[in-house]
Length: 453
Ligand code: PFF
Image (tube, rainbow, N blue to C red; front, side):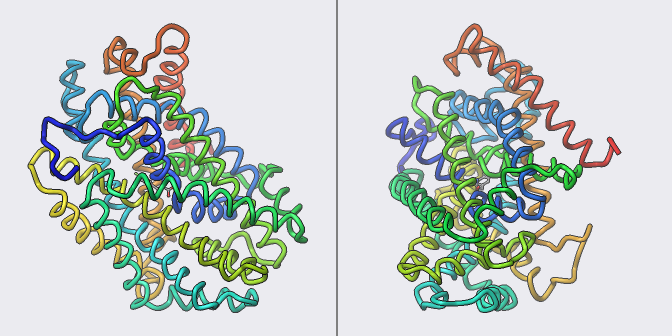
């Protein structure tokens, strides 16, 4: 991989490799950490329903579009969009999609690395036996201690960033496929095991009602915005990450089938994570609205009370860390592949450069839980603002542009050829991607601005 040539864009070894790597990018903190906490903050069932609708109606056609653009261009998102604009005979300004993607990846990784650091520090706590027999107060205390200590947070943020830089520097295939291949099935097994354990607990049926019986009285314009943003975030969609991975995909494999697999896997893991967290919340009289600390204040409680809990806790937090790791890598890939293909900057140097810049910005997110906790804008601290701006604004906007380009700008013969679709099957992608998905994003944006009262 490291000896790749400009003309010789790398390729995954098999179709399964593309699915594994993309699923590795998609499945991450978004599924296990973010989904439960924003579901808790947004009232449960109604949020889940709106989120699933966003996935199906908006995100699915855009995911297929993004992979298609990547594979057609066979290059990084910036040069790739320039190439595709030329092929389509349209304004090269569509490169903006690539530039926005690189910026968004940089912004996301800055705080993603902080939360990955939390997961890593919980591996250490689990190994120390800190959760064994712990009650709700102790567990909450552990999390509060962690986030109130700038030194500890920065230490783990640094470890997370180093881990990311090392893998990115080594290239696309080095270890990444293997990590995902092992992590994904194991993660599912452990989540299912924990759901099984939860079935016997007092909060299980309350949790199922909370997650699956919608209460629309809690829904606001922001609920739609958060649900839509999360559909993009959880699929790594709208910023060129999936485009880059698509560009490494061999010709002749079905984009649609691979895309659907990723969505099903990602959604299953998110729902399982919810079914693990909320029974613990309700069995222990905790609040679903704990915010970003939710999983760190709940998982240790259940694990600490289980027979094999000591070992399970270690394995689980290791898996969460690996899931975060395989996602973090993909956040840097658009920038690194651009620097290599356009300027010949070696992966090692670009990975270090991007890592240092991202780490520096991430310091503000880490400190927004302690030293600069009071610095707020729109009632959000720095971490919250970054989350909101990237997931709820930049990703959907990027996704909308991707869908518009893929349908209204590209020649239909080209998109049909790349997707390997024709007739009704082609239209089944084209219409949702051309009309429904962009209109959906536009409506949610306008609604979020309060335009519909
Ligand atoms: N999809 C990742 C998650 O759910 O944790 C986050 C993410 C990774 C978003 C890569 C965007 C991206 F390009």
